[in-house]
Image (cartoon, rainbow, N blue to C red; front, top):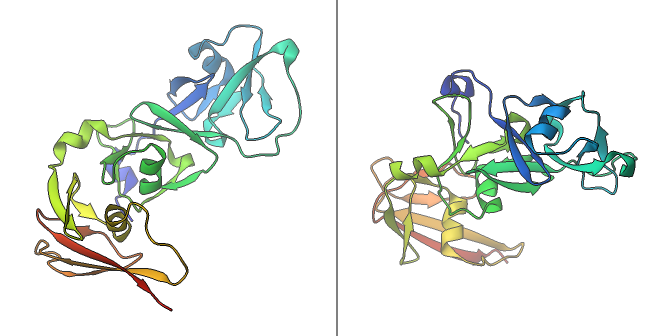
Length: 242
C-alpha cells in the first residue's frame, strides 16, 4: 500500500470535488456547497428542486439554501417542484468517481487503485493520481485503499508520457506494460484472461531476470509489489490443493 504522506505530497490542500446533476458535471471548490450553486452551475431551472439520488425508490429533496455535503453522495437530479415525491431513502447514495473528466457511478465508497482502474476500463498499470488543489498530486498504486470521502477526482493522462513502455514475459508471452512496479494480482491478470477458480485452486508466480532490487523470487497473494525491468520473466501456474 502506498505510504506517501498525503499532506506532504499535496502541500496540505484538499482534494478536488465535483457534483453530477442531470448527468452534468460541476467541479466544486469544496465538498460543501449550497444546493442553489449546484443548480445554477448544472443548468437546473427555477421551479425545480435538487434531489440527491439514492439506489432506492425514494430520494432526498434539498432546499435551495441548504448546504450539501458531497461526501454523503454527489449524484443528483431535478424534479419540478409540484411533481416532487417524498419518503425516506432505503438504499445507499449513488457516488460518482471522476477519472480524466469522465464520471462512473457506484454505491461503493471504498475502492482500491486497481478496482478504480477496472471500473473505468483502464489498462493495468495506468498511472493514477488523486487530484488536489496543488501542483503536487497523490500517486495511487494498484493496492492502495481509496475512500470516497477523501476525494473522488483522479486523472491518468497527464502523467502517461513519464513512463516508458517495456516488454515483460508472462508464461513466455510478451506483454507490453507502462509501469515501474507490479503486484501478484496484476501478474495474474496478465497471465489469464479468465483465471481458473475454485476453493482448492491457488497460483504460483515465479519471476527471474529482474532488477538488482529483486532479481528473482516468488510472488504470493498479498505480497508487496516488485520492481520491473525490460525483459523480466514471470511463470504463473495454477495448482490444485486437493
